[in-house]
Image (tube, rainbow, N blue to C red; front, side, top):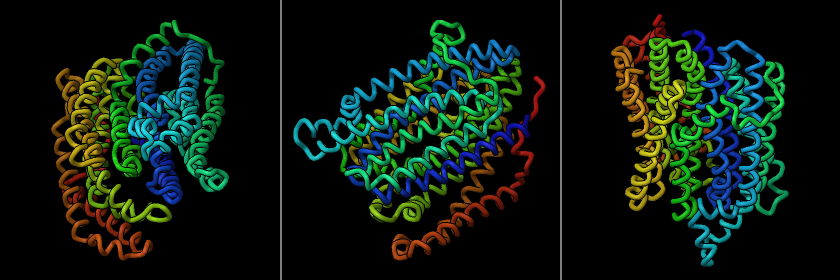
Length: 522
C-alpha cells in the first residue's frame, strides 16, 4: 500500500506539475496582455465564479460525496450494477448542471451585480466602475457554460481515480491552459477588448477537457448512456452527502468569492493583485495538497469499507506528513521570495514592477495559510470517506462566519492585503477544527514519530529561511537587474534553499522510511 500510494501521489504530482507550469505560462501571457487594469479585474472576476463552482464539484463536494459511494458499489464486484449507478449519476448530474449553466448565462447581469456590488452601484450612479459591470455581465455569458463541461470532467475524473487511473484526470487541466494560451495569442487582436479572447479560451478549454476523457472512459468500460435517477437509492445517497459537503472542504473558495465582492469596492487593481498572488499560492497547493488528497480519498474509502481503522489512521498520518514536509518550506519560500517570483514570472508588457510589489503583499499574507489549506485538503477526506458530511459543513459555516469577521476587521486598515490575511486565518481555523474532531473521536491522532517528523521539517525550514535571507539582495538591486539576472538570482536562491532544507533533514536523521505509510493489520 505504501509503494502504491507513493507511486499514485508521484503520478498525480508530475501531471499536476505540468499543468501548473503551463498555468504559470498562461498567467504570464495574461499579465502581458492585461496587467492589472480594469479589463484584467473583470476577466478574473468573470472567470472566478465558474471556477469557484468547478472547485465545488471537481475538487470539493461532488468528489467527496461520490467517491465513497462508488467505492462501495465497486466492492460489490458487480459490473452491471456499477454501470447502472454511473448512468444514473451522470444523467442526473448532467441535467442539473445544464440547468445551472442556462440560468447562469441568462442571469449573468444579476450574478455580476451580486458578486461585483461595487461596480453595480457605480453602474446605477454613473460612477467609474460602470463599464466594469457591463463588461462583467457580458463576459460571464461566455465563461459560465464552463461549469457544464468541467462538472462532467470532474465526474469522469472521479470514476477514473476510483479505478486507480490517476494520470488522465491529473493531466486534463493541461489542456485548459493550452487552449487559453492559444486563444490569447491568436484571437486577442480580433476583439475590441482582448479579455474576450481569454473568456472564449475558458469556454473552449472546458469543451476540450471533456472530449479528451471520453476515450479513456470507453477503454475502462465505464462510458454509459446517461439516465435520470434522482430517486435511485445510491444517487440519493450521493445527493444527501453532497449537499452539506458544499460548505465543507470548499469553504476556502467561498471565502475567496467574498473577497472578490469586497475587493470590488476597493481601488482598481485589487482583484488582479489578489488573483496573481492566489495563482502562485495555487501552484504548491495543487502540486502537493490536492495531489495527495486526490490519491488518499479512494484509499481511505476502501479502508473504511473494509473496517481497517488502524490502516485508515496510518494513511491519514502519511497524508499529513507529506503535506507538511512540502507545505511548510513552500510557505517560507513564498513569503521570502514573493516579489522576486512575481517580477521574474510576470514583469513584462502591462505588468509593471509596481504591480509585482502590490501582488507580493497579498501573496505573503496568503502564504501564511498555505499549510492550513493543504491540511484541510487531507483532513476533510477523513470525514467524507466515512460518509460524514455534517461535521465539515458545521465547521465550514463557523469558518465562513469567522472569515467575514476577519474581513471586516482587516480590510479597512489593510485593504486587499487584509482580505488575503483573513482567508489565511479562516483556513487555519478550519484545519484546527477538523483535526480536533478527528482526534477527539479517536479516528486520527498524530503519532509521536510524526510530531518529531514535523519538528525536523520546521528546523530545516528555519535553516532554509536563514540561507535565503543571507544570500538575497535588496529591492533596489532586484529592480536594477535585467530579467536574465533576476532569473539567475532567483534560481540560485531557490536552489540554495532547497539544498539547505534537504541537508538539514538528513543531518537530523530523516530517511526514506519516514516517507512511507505504516502498515497496520487492524
